[in-house]
Image 1 (cartoon, rainbow, N blue to C red):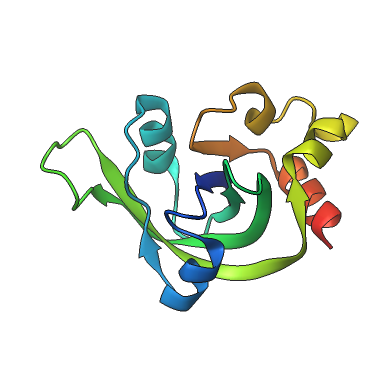
Image 2: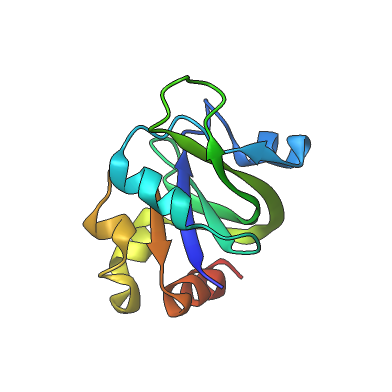
Length: 134
């Protein structure tokens, strides 16, 4: 299993809306590195859901329920989506500040490549964020 983090601005697509929808395709990715990360996602992989810009915190866990396919919002074949479904809301959202101040997470992609919208996590990084959110 692989572990990931995806970002969404809550005013565009929030964790609350994601839970109401029960499933969504993750679209709007227009960065090649982020696109390659989408292509690497496998069904069953776990994904942290991060609210960017407003809040700046990890709020929940999702899972990949369908591997990559053509982004239906564009005819440009360079772009893909995956389907995600919510799994669990974190008891306590984990802020970017908390992540930056945790010595165990100081090298996480969220800190090193802050603008990247889809990024891999190591299992121990994923587990640490879960621990902080419990």
